[in-house]
Length: 237
Image 1 (cartoon, one colour):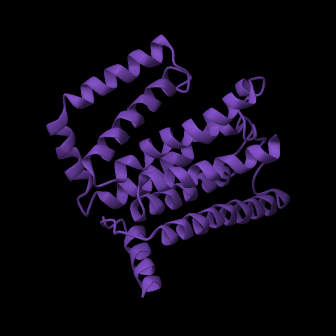
Image 2 (cartoon, rainbow, N blue to C red):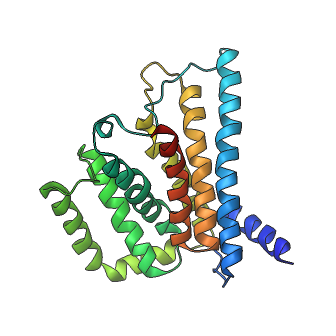
């Protein structure tokens, strides 16, 4: 019965049908976390295999990756690397890209705040992980504007949950999550196919994180994202 319910949820999810979360046992939530992690591994492996074959047949160019750790962090203490990549990044990215998918207003509002903050810092070439005068001013301004626009924000959430809008929001958030990782690679000499195939795993991962966030809650997708970011660091350390 549970497998049928999960399959039905998955079908509704891929169609972009907004669904309400149901209470689940801790065991079922942990099992979802394990299956989510396995799915993330499988996506990375399968797309890497396709990428290798396409590069071998000269359909795409080889793209150098910056690795799991950005260049500016490699000379930093390990605790800071762990803090930014394993703890802060999952919270910020899940809040931004999955928070806007939630039907609970408080999570939706946090999602909007985080998304605007991240995009503003990205446009201004600021490190959104660091607490500086610039990032404090940006975050404070965004929080004030959003909190004083509660009515408009609530109307925006209702609009986003419309049956003709929500599917677009779901897929845009997934592909936006893929584009967010554009600077993980050096695409200077890459063709369009190479760019797409390298960003595809992140977009698919965005769908997996979204599924978990809608099925179990935003904190569980943050947990899954944390585990996904942690294992490459263990290999790097």
